[in-house]
Length: 469
Ligand SMILES: Cc1cc2nc3c(=O)[nH]c(=O)nc-3n(C[C@H](O)[C@H](O)[C@H](O)COP(=O)(O)OP(=O)(O)OC[C@H]3O[C@@H](n4cnc5c(N)ncnc54)[C@H](O)[C@@H]3O)c2cc1C
Image 1 (spheres, rainbow, N blue to C red):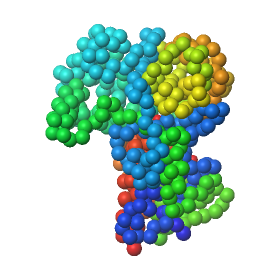
Image 2: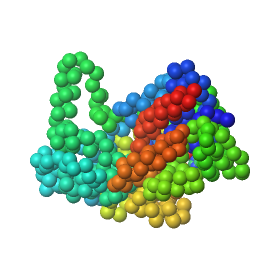
Image 3: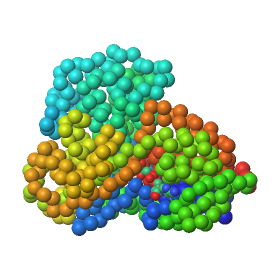
Image 4: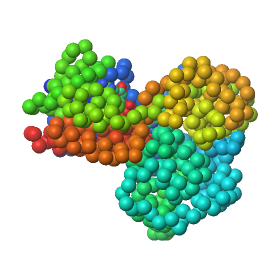
């Protein structure tokens, strides 16, 4: 019997196991961990695939260094030396709008000279300064927030692409508070986004004068960071640092609360016991597992939808591309009749993602607003992405390398009301002491968010077991 069984071997599950072991050691407790992973490898959405000299990220291509959690995990698992910061030029991001690419303005001056937003749209956006903050606690959608504070054009050309870039989501349904809590805080703390920008700039200037460390030129967004061998070095690093076992091809089908712990059903009929269980798997998988233990919990979990997404990697000889690819890539404004949500210039972001003299482009197709794309054949997905590359960058030739990686359920969608769902889940979990949940379905989808939530969950698990001893 393991002390703690963790269901799911993605970054959330691995980081939880690592943090449980670390906390237990600190407190002088002997706590054994076991990760059960249904796939043939740990990593979940993280998978760096090396094919024909290209390094294709199946899911995420990095994490931002502006938050400490993933960097701390790298330090604690001794993989910091392998980290690779994105190129400085990759700070330049583009939006495809009105038939061409516009650089996303990164200063007030650049904003006013940019052709991305019309003059009436700029004027409307500037009026944000005059709009009083909303403090009624309502869980506003991103679209309602953007229309109220920034205007319809900013919603279309700035907020919409940002939501598809992070969540492949629909701003009309998604919760501002749950998806981008910092933006919500800026409104409530400072009275508005422009006011917040000025006050934070002033604060940074004062900090600089007083010699305190300040954020680098990359600003609050941070620098995208990965590893020489791709983001799944994070997985091998954390997995290698665990003392507990990771059991692959171990699909959990059911969970029962017993007097002194839990019984866990595995596909194939085996039953395992554990003192505590942490779910770090997708919400819909957990719903099926707990259906018999707690029907209400299953009902809540089933209300967290997932957006589908296909990742399409295209490799070309550099000399045959008419575009300079000097930047991060672009996101498309909805309504531009583009097929993909956007395309990242992966070999411009990190230097070693394509063979010498070649480039790697990675497009995202589908998302919450275009789920029908998942019905397309692989050939159709390829054709549609190549149409986009022609429209956006003038690439008028077949790639030398192309791969399509579909994710039927790619990214959980935090709809308006998500916070209440999480509260409801926490209430249900109290009926099954020793049961904990973490993972990207609940507390943020970025790798940093997953690691932070894993640390917090691990602290609760160690506390729970500590009290039993
Ligand atoms: C295409 C794409 C691009 C992304 N880009 C970025 C990015 O650049 N930066 C960033 O920070 N984030 C990005 N994300 C988000 C980030 O990758 C994910 O939110 C994060 O990896 C999720 O980790 P997780 O461990 O919570 O879940 P998962 O990775 O989904 O892991 C869950 C694990 O549970 C296992 N499992 C499921 N059911 C069972 C069961 N019944 N029994 C046992 N095991 C089970 C699964 O096999 C899986 O391994 C991206 C996501 C996608 C899809």
